[in-house]
Length: 92
Image (cartoon, rainbow, N blue to C red; front, side, top):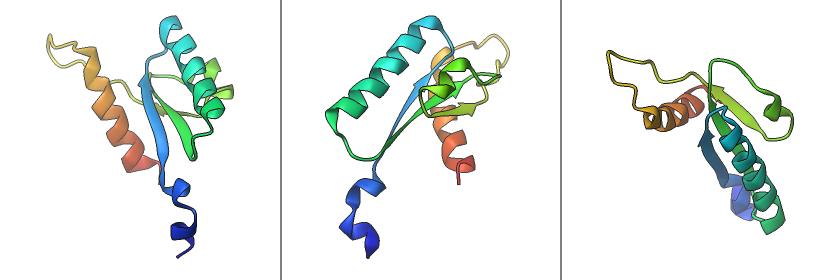
């Protein structure tokens, strides 16, 4: 019943990102707005990358592998559902 007293613990904001400079400022800004808004619960950036990056010190981040490039299909948005699946499966 403890969770019923603190429903914000059930909410968590996630967003997907790549390691590009464009996504870097967007990630910083989203983290800032999340904190400024007073929204309850945590926030996590789902980084689709082969390696961690320097922004992990500023923005809570989960590193998910990039979607494998199968044949000639290099559709980048596949990273979003794959990163969510990886986070849900492995974050405990």
